[in-house]
Amino acid sequence: MTGDIELTGDTDLAAFVRGLPKAELHLHIEGTLEPEMLFELAGRNGVELPFTDEAAVRAAYSFTDLQSFLDIYYQGAAVLQTGQDFYDLMAAYLRRAHADGVRRAEMFFDPQTHTERGVGFDVFMEGFTSAMADAETATQISSGLIMCFLRHLPGEAACDTFRAAEAWLDRIIGVGLDSSEADHPPEEFAEAYAMARAAGLRPVAHAGEEGPPSYITGALDALGAERIDHGVRCEEDSALVRRLAEAQTPLTVCPLSNLALCVVDDLAGHNLKRLLDAGLKVTVNSDDPAYFGGYVADNYLAAASALGLTRAELAQCARNSLEASFAPADQKQAWLADLDAFLAPA
Ligand code: ADE
Ligand code: ZN
Image (cartoon, rainbow, N blue to C red; front, top):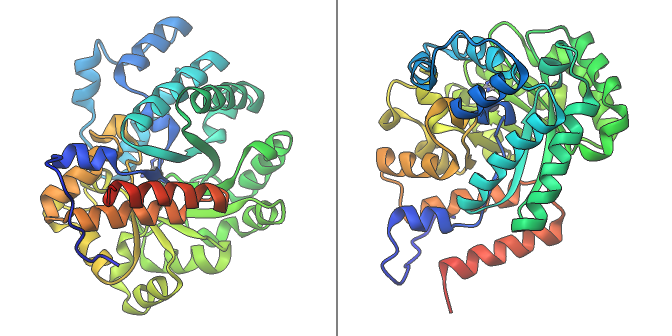
């Protein structure tokens, strides 16, 4: 439903977008590490960085594809060592998300990136969860954690990671699949996902970012994915587009990420609006905002400007995000009522 919504008042578009109650459903917490914090934590932990200053870091953020980004992203994550580091990272993101109108954030984290450096679940989970609780007390922002398996590592490593997370499963809402997509089909992770689903975790997966539409089908069929992260290459398979539309499978689309990683040549050529017009449940997200030049509201605004999205279409994306969230139904209803009230003030 993307019918015209007449809004009263002279709210400008940025204020409108920030005011829209929304959920962010595709956000890697390690991808919120801003250069300032990178240097601060490197200093705090005695980690040597291959950059002289923040400007040099930003200059290095010029990517040609997903892998060129991941190489820098994993390097950056090495400064995260103590519970306080993970707390600070999470607290900073949730402050920004709240300022962007986010009522609910469902955030990816990459345990294998940390455990392989000797930083265990107790360290990062303590840091993340205490920052999430403090943020909820301070701003009412609701949040949940989705544990991602790294797909450049074997399926068996994903199973081991799931077992290592056992003591923390009640603090994790779902599982995801990220990292290098090419040549790493979802089927390799079927066993880890089966264990996660049996434990009550909600399955999502990156698919169709760089990889082919068959990886989207594989994520749905072999992993039981309830949402597809990115999914923009679904357009190459018209039967898949129909399937996604009929099932109203949410796509967590990340326009500035797709631009930064050369998934699209320019934002005007992004298929977000076409997917919306085809009736897919499109949501707008930031992916790795510290690396791609914008948080969630910036993504709405960049898409609006490049694709000429109407306020009604932006509101539809926000509505989709709230509906697609894994929060309890009563909370979702309350946020959706807030959205309706925002769109049609009494
Ligand atoms: N890890 C962090 N960001 C990612 C992305 N956009 N795709 C795959 N893995 C990621
Ligand atoms: Zn991602």
